[in-house]
Amino acid sequence: MISSSSDTSWFAKASKHAAQPESTTQTSQADSALRSETLLRGKKNVDILHNGSRYKLQATKLGKLILTK
Image 1: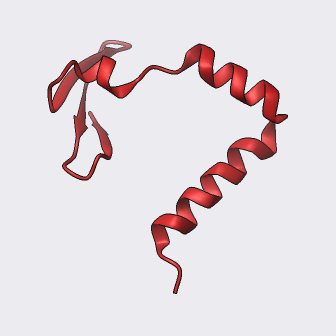
Image 2: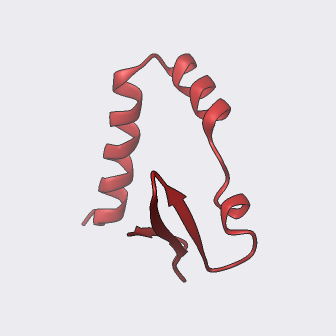
Image 3: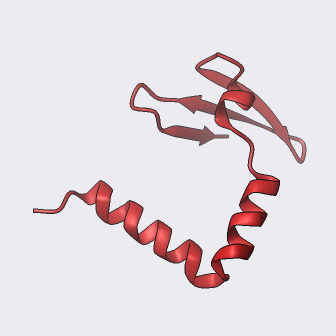
C-alpha cells in the first residue's frame, strides 16, 4: 500500500518539473526561495501583511506550514 503523502509529493515534484526545463526550474527556485526559518525567526507563527490584509503563517508539530487570513 502506498501512502497518500508519498503520492502527493511525487505528484507535486512531477507537476513542478513538467512546466519548465529542469535547469530553469532549479535556478528560479534558488533565486526566489526563502527558508521558512527566516520567516518564522524561531517562533511557531508570524503575521504577514500582504496587500493591506494580515495573514498568519504557522509551523505545525509535524513540520508543515499553514497560512490563514
